[in-house]
Image 1 (cartoon, rainbow, N blue to C red):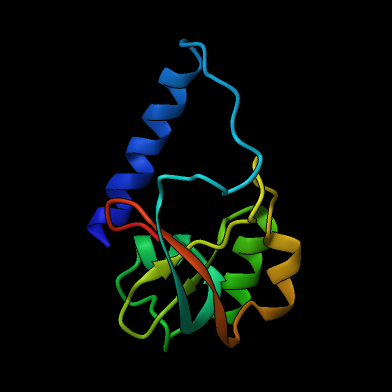
Image 2 (image 1 turned 120 degrees about the vertical axis):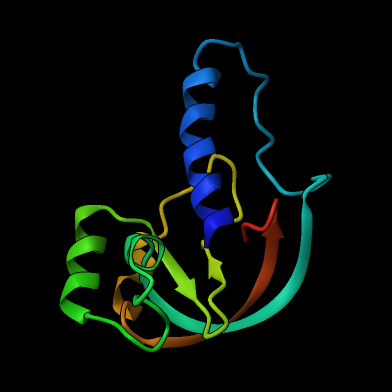
Length: 125
């Protein structure tokens, strides 16, 4: 969890530094990507990302449905939290990335089994 929190903090700093430097255009597909990726199937609870990062009692078996829905509706990113405590952040397969919140809203508070491509970078997936 500490690695994910560090990533979130570093990502915020990175956004600030990216606005000052010109950036090359992003690719619009994953073809030729150098990312660490693999096909996988994961099982976990669809929920907001804030609670499990800020509250150690927030896990894949302990959930306040009311709180999770309020957080997601207010804009908290949606994640899939496994029973092992791994957080998976669903993203689209396109660049620029598209928000996945509306697709995942019907599944908040439910356990899912999903298959697809998993990208991993410094412990974040």
